[in-house]
Amino acid sequence: QVQLLESGGGLVQAGGSLRLSCVASGSIWSINDMGWYRQAPGKQRELVAIISSGGMTNYADSVKGRFTISRDNAKNTVYLQMNSLKPEDTAVYYCNANIVNGVSRRNYWGQGTQVTVSS
Figure 1 (tube, rainbow, N blue to C red):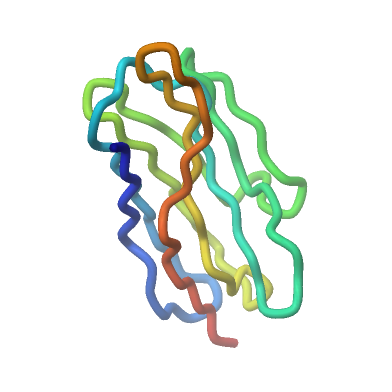
Figure 2 (cartoon, rainbow, N blue to C red; figure 1 turned 30 degrees about the vertical axis):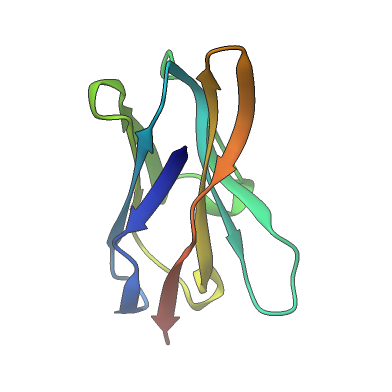
């Protein structure tokens, strides 16, 4: 069984920073892409940032220059450093990882962590 556990969400004022972490645990052979998604009330879940096992990154236009995704492959962990936060960044943030376990390869989701940015 594989689990993704997120941490680091909270309440912050506009212009502030937060760092999210997500640790994958369980029966893991290897991890391909890891990413962060978010879902605001009444909106669809959207990609925030994604990072490959080799470190290639891609960001949503709305967070470019403010957010940085990184990962520690030895710890099966992905991070999201969020700077210059805006009220429109308020959402539940979900970790996602494409994990190989034996002959199985599938996407797993964390439970989500709330980020609230006050104006």
